[in-house]
Length: 112
Image (cartoon, rainbow, N blue to C red; front, side, top):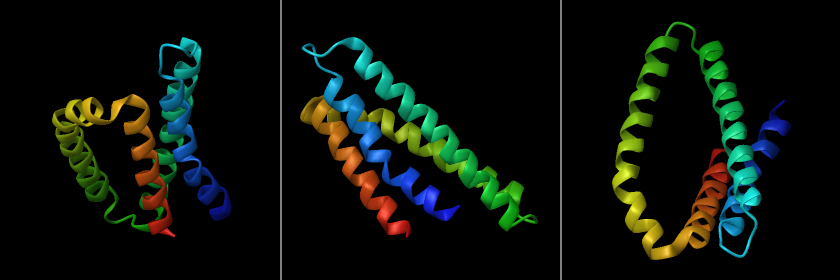
């Protein structure tokens, strides 16, 4: 089970780069749409697996942990709304998404 999760998380950067390098005028629009669809679907599966693991590992604190997680995700999303526009204005869609893919890959390596 853990081997599959490691492979799943290591492909996060690849899924992000599908969107990044097909989001230009010279590429067909379906490429970036496929990249976004694969990225969103894989993140949904990953988050569901992590939530299920947390609830099974800490059944007495499951509701509190999930509530705290929801608060942190909402706070981070609010912050990213303000930081996203200058970030992509500076690096562009392809460079910014590639940088985020690298950060996600480093974060995944830090977990294991």
